[in-house]
Length: 383
Ligand code: MG
Image (cartoon, rainbow, N blue to C red; front, top):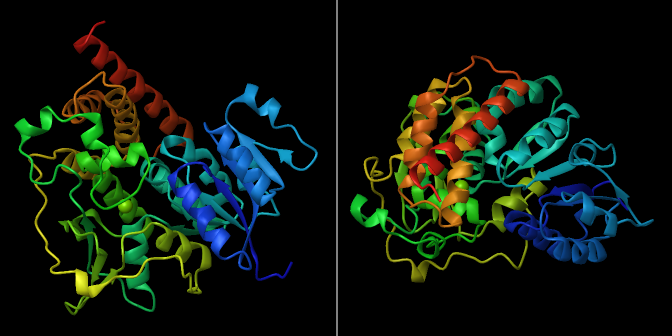
């Protein structure tokens, strides 16, 4: 195998981003080779992926189920062991939620290229991860479409950006009133107008929490103050984000909304690759691109997240953990859609924050916030 073939580990291979990563690898087999696969829940799909891609290392979250995966064809390793393995040069972090934090840190400390789809790790521990990345010459390459757009706009520039403009589709409830929002169902919330994504991020898109997390993610990835990061609603999801420079010039990145493009860009960087499977924009079918200011009052998660990002300390970790538990409660129909922001806000209010937290303090804040939300939700809806 030639040295130009990148050796990939995909953590979270059975999730939405993981599966789309494997589609890109399948389309470009001469460019990428899968050496590691890791999954949390879907063992049937993982077994199929193992048979197709023949990885050297495998991880499955459920220890009992792991026994069924025993094989002489590959080694069963932990997420961190795969993330820092010498045979792996690029780690795709596609796990959802806080489970991405520890393996991301392991990959960063091992100086890997990290194609990062997991935003929670940067939101929770942005200071630690970016410092460790510098120390160990690790490269963090964003997969999130907005951050990929900003990264592509910044390529070739020698001066810092004056302003980042993150676009947001507005989600399925764009234009709804607060009263309308309180009655929405899980099914309605899971119907995203423009993107195919996992359940957690789809609900976060509906509350606009996702955009708030992305603002914090952008702050750490591009080392830009929160004041210089704006959010703009753009329902067509054609412009994936923009960068404004000191002379007032603005660069935007546009494409058909398909996650495989930002995934492929992160994998192939600095090269661009032709992939006939990626859909192209058809300008004859685009009548207009529209923009609006976000409705901060109807979607308070956005301002809540940005405020937590600005306050820093362990607030972003609490934001992430509280949101993760609240979204889970909503998905299992134990709370209403509008309870998500209420529970997250209450957790943030009651939190005793720690400045410049170590990893253990971040994990403690995370555990505290999860329990807090469960407590508050049970108090409201005793069964
Ligand atoms: Mg995004």
